[in-house]
Image (cartoon, rainbow, N blue to C red; front, side, top):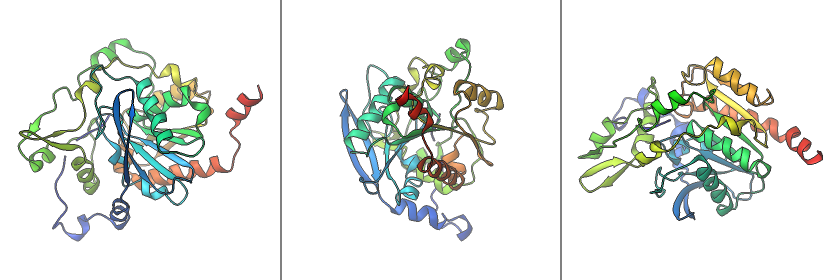
Length: 314
């Protein structure tokens, strides 16, 4: 889960200013596109050459595509990178009848087709986006080159806990009189320490929209009123290569959760730990995450997809 705090870096001492890798990345402006999926407008961002192999980056709950806008440009030498706002998030439309993981998975594939992503894109999802990526990999795995799941906890079914969490997060998004007041109320869920204030500020500013009476968050609170999806049933049915990543300091993907996820995948997917990362890996350890993704991609480029080969020959 994700979303919302921060202040402007302008006038800050040199030590607090964003590093050159970050400023260079966000200066690489994406193209903005949209496609209608089952009556809802889905916004997405693109970087790079569409003739290259495609990466599709999926944000977490209450987040948006710009969680990836400082990471996506790091891959454009070898990949065409696409980041959608899932319905109910960012600049995409809302679904009055509610949201499901299956619907979001359909949106991901619709965006891939509309963006003319090359054959068998690779999907990378963080937190809730990881759940979506798992559903995509189970339902559309034959059309994917692989899926990477970032700090997405898959736990043994626990109906009591699921019901206790249902609808409690981000229930009543507020409207603030001005942008600066709204930025002061940005926080992360789950909470964690942050040292990259320039990233938090960037994400916060893209999390807000101006409305009558002030500024409010872009996400639809109805996203969290949906019935919980048990993605356990999807993880062991994925039909493409997988890589599982988690933050070393994450409170969500615990050793017990890691063991269960490895059990569901038949221990066929690497479990990669990102050093000194909490749950929000793209925010607090972006360079380590970029290096880990590059390593997995390099391996997949030069190895045989044994799962796909087995399915094709069975």
